[in-house]
Image 1 (cartoon, rainbow, N blue to C red):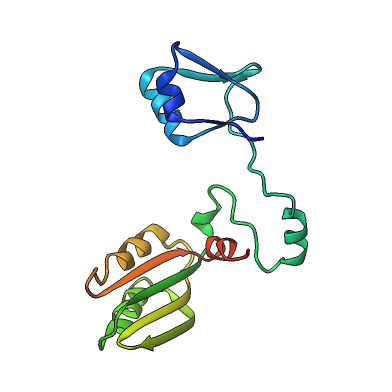
Image 2: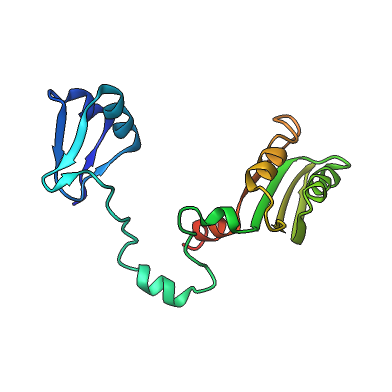
Length: 169
């Protein structure tokens, strides 16, 4: 059974050191609360380090049978990966697709695939896009997600590998 240390546990601690069992997961909020309060979290063998994530009992089978759905990239690899999934949904009106693709053109992005559906005055668009090498994912994400508005349309941007990992279940 996995144990967790929460921010509430940290607030209730009576000392300056909290000793936890190996394998305990300390939530991000608990780590922040401990840092702000000057409390050290450690295990019997030393300082706390986050345990490796459990992929579950079917992880090996999934990797063998679903090679086209790769694991999400390791920390830091996302910056060099250029596949991006963009979704937009909202009230249909002339020019929505043009606005989105113009922003992509300004970023020198290449649209690999696009799907659009309009139902009773509302649209949903999914674009598979490749960013040019060295382009900033954060910049294109910020640009696109600021488009539209709550009464018009909403755009969401994510790395393709993250999207595939999320939807492989």
